[in-house]
Length: 525
Ligand code: NAP
Image (cartoon, rainbow, N blue to C red):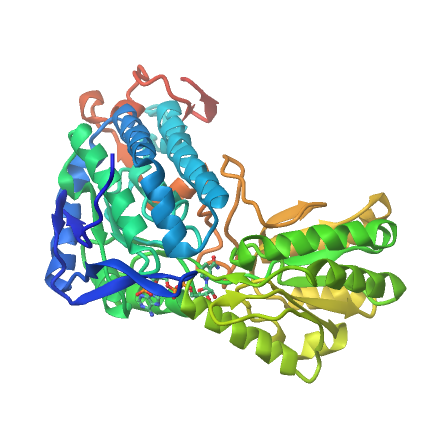
């Protein structure tokens, strides 16, 4: 079957031609526009999508966990039904290779199914029962707590994962699992891919007989659509992955509303890698080649890209830098996701190359629209004093920092902004240094890993893809893994309510058979 792309928005379960002007998709490899034209939604259409989402909220959250699990599974099946049309369109719009996008589709389907499993298991609702103690002085009432969805969520699709962090990505999956309708702002870099996936979701809504307002796709480009969406009173939370400036602009809009709402924005991170002395001496060359592979994977367009490497100055670090430079030198320039990302990358690399305190080690030849590997080195002293060396350069560029000693390395670590990840390359003899670093890293980052590289984020129950500002706007959260559902939930407590008014998850006989904390004891009680 061949799936048509019409350039429409999807509002209320139907294709709607946007009234706000038009734009075309861009093929970054061919450097050419792609048909058809896409029509941008206007303010009235954004309003309609948000009102429908608000109207859908109560009936949607009243569905059982099993029904929402089936819905997520049905979305996954409908995405697979799109077959090669989806992969080919995503390749054309992103410049990413087939294998990467097929893998990403697997991840997208897998995370929808993971959330379906979470719903079937039931503990996400965090049911708690404190039985009444009428004899106590003063008497304790019967208290029962569960989590419920926050309300309609505005999701901003990311450019760098056109499937897994986009229309049916982790933000959408976790919001729908929580019982929250989603109004999705498609990323203008892959509008055709977005439409195909959105049509799969709309079809799943029809199959599962859910209210049409459970999902809407808003098409368009420019800041107005996103800002109008976040300002809409029906919207109760925001999920965003993109630039620091975009995330901060949306946080401002959300904070200035009559009713401020939470924004979960994943923004910028340089993901420090610490090459500790024993590991550096024993296997510096192997670490350098693993680092080069991680840095250049996907043309460096990952939020977990290793943009900073710290080690102690000396012959071992010099040899490591030479090995990393040698591994990076043959890496060809490759097409970046968008012209904007390519030009920001070129500017970031040029700024580092011209920096008085930085020595270029590798600056591969690039061309317009492409990203070429770049590696720079500076001293710990210079890095400590210069805040412009800490900015994310989104792409395959990294800065090595040769620190005078462990005290200086720790001082630099203390001075870093919040990060998604920190990596320790360490051997047994590095444990004392690693122990000194750990408490600092726990305060600074969301995920600490040993003897690996930060790219490659497992979607699982124990994953944290988050971290203190500015890696995200709210370091208490993760945007990957089942814990991502917590961003879109809030607790409600029921005091002395009769059994037949209570939700099933809190009734005495535990009809859902879920894990609950009953008078302090965790079990299927
Ligand atoms: P972006 O420019 O922040 O765009 C993300 C989404 O937010 C798009 O839908 C965009 O609309 C919208 N938007 C951006 N600024 C806005 C504003 N001020 N008000 C309202 N809406 C706004 O991100 P991008 O296009 O993906 O990439 C640009 C840069 O972001 C990259 O060079 C990189 O530095 C960073 N980035 C970081 C990550 C990460 O995971 N940390 C991932 C991707 C990108 P349009 O569709 O109209 O542009």
